[in-house]
Length: 391
Image (cartoon, rainbow, N blue to C red; front, side):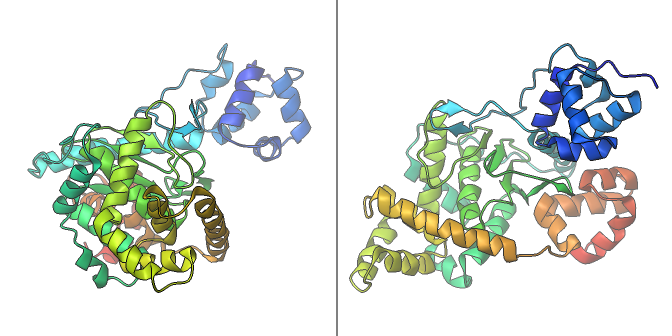
């Protein structure tokens, strides 16, 4: 058999980039893990067929394996992710492919909206990044037609998240939420790599929420990413409620956090509510829980707001956050998969999904192109249409 003269260093880079261990990669090439390691050390070479299977498994072009060194890859939107004061230099194949798939969808949807006569949205880039967070929050609240009374229309913070998404979509914001690349359940998105991203566009502004993050944190990420739109700054974020924002890009992330906090838990009403509850409850934990019920947000959002306003100390917040993390993990393990056709519009956004389906039926979009747009086989377009009420 003819061997493939691949670059061992590129093979190792590609495997680590794809976050696949030697054991998993070995199965795709029908070899032992030890042979994979020998290929990476340059002691042996795979056959061309084995190299092709490896490239497919690692989600890279076959030709990459023959490069003299790993290619320099640059994210298509600003990278604001940090660990402490340092930027995150590594980017997985999953994140790259997710962004490529999202931008492919975005290009089509933007053209579609223009053809439909959609006009530029006035709130995109309305504020500078150094603007007062309270002014931005007030404008966002007005644009989304949010009031404290809205909280009484829903029973829980989970329902309030859905309520916010509907208001955002009504304002022209495209919201996607997924925990996988395309519809591939074998390619899970890691929350330590990113929690969300925003693409600023006056016609088709988009926010993406990592669906693998705790649902308690997703509502904060949603408003955080929408703030990127209001200040006209696209970017990928890994901001977490349990750590401070440091390093380059911190000013942008800090203002996004501040706006999210003010939109979800307005300072004035919160301080008044906290004081009232504090006089009745026996502990910070009870006060946090009751406040969360009032504002219809998760308890960790309330706890973080209380920390930022000096109502609780950092050790109290951290202990509380860690205890909630354990609950999230248990709930995640208990949850199963949902109905595919109900999940798809959440994953890609209802308005986008409906636009693709309608374009298929009015014959302005080929069935196979619609399938590619929604990452499903063309035969599933009609059942999807029936499920979402377009057919």
